[in-house]
Length: 139
Length: 137
Image 1: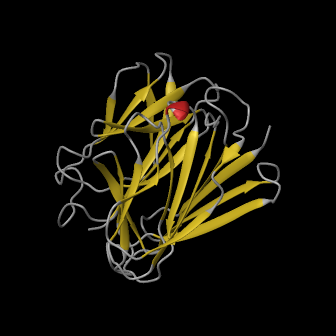
Image 2: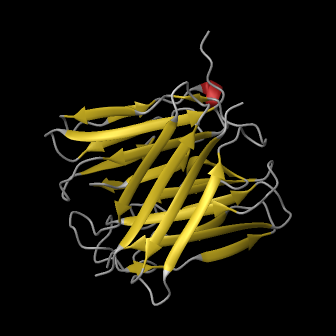
Image 3: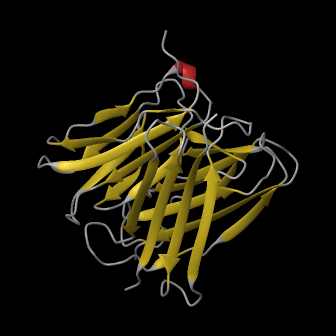
């Protein structure tokens, strides 16, 4: 069993009149257990040069060898652009989740289900735009 | 303008043969700008006592395709307890005890952000949205 942690810290001194300093730490475990997830795609880097939609991760057992579908998985995606106007739009299947602007990242729980859970990205520009991404998942 | 940062740290000494120690920080800005997001729901805490799906955050036309970031955490300590997150009819994923998520949200028409607890016994959830574009008359 592996031990993998994901920590989030959100801070602001001026968003509210009270200082915001939120921290959350998750140990990434298999569904419904205290056993750590043991598989990962590794940290990947993808450069796009088209504003067509790409399937970043196929939601099928053939791609992610879960014992069954709908188990524990987490996705990390970051837009590495430094141009504020450049973004990627994330879809799950055909549903738009949101946009990651330059420098933004997301950490998303993912329920894999064949053909209905593909993770797709659509860059806003046809010039080079680079993202980093990674999936953690159980066996 | 406010300055709000979100930092993620992913760590593992043993999920692969190379140590994972990734830290990335984002400054939360309005769409396509370097101006900071200036509105928030604040940090909410709800203890759920039903397995019915509820709309955690309703979409609003004023927020359509503007920048919004949503944080949700399952604060249960029972490993078997989870919440299922959906947008419209699309399941996104499950947050197990102690899990959190941080996602961008486009607020497309009809795409309310919904949550379904796995148990009817008290299950605590925290959530917050930091955003632009929602101004009530």
